Length: 186
Image 1 (cartoon, rainbow, N blue to C red):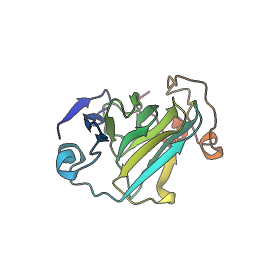
Image 2 (cartoon, one colour; image 1 turned 90 degrees about the horizontal axis):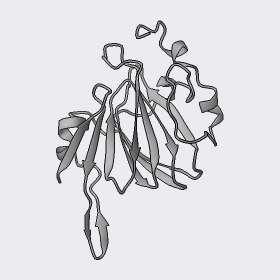
Image 3 (cartoon, one colour; image 1 turned 180 degrees about the horizontal axis):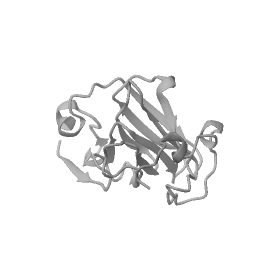
Image 4 (cartoon, one colour; image 1 turned 180 degrees about the vertical axis):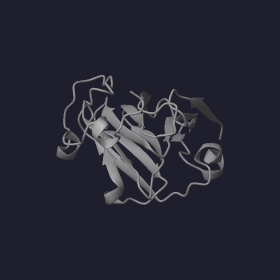
């Protein structure tokens, strides 16, 4: 399988593109094979694979990550629909710390991205019933979960649609300044 890797403005955040095999019966898309993804996934283990489905256009999930003793990297791919997917760099030693980058994920584009440890992730649904696949490098530990509110004024993420259907948890997440004091990147 040929995979095209595209750098993004965030250090270590890579967009990965691959094509599905199609014929008269339909299509087949290999979404993760360790040997094909090794140049980017490296030796990270695969601890869990999740699928989320979000019904309503404009719904936002995030911004979340897992830090502490079990930081996680994520490979995120859209299986159905279309999403505006966002990563925010929180890594102290990163040249892109405090910056965000967004990418539209869709099955038609055959793209995914690797979100490294120390980066927040969130998305907004652009088509009803959008479904995401996540490959996680660490086991889920609720005590290590952190997040930043979707509309943090410092980040000023350019969400394409008005926000709807936010979870209570996501509405109450702190601002970036509360999560990462002091803000050395300001």
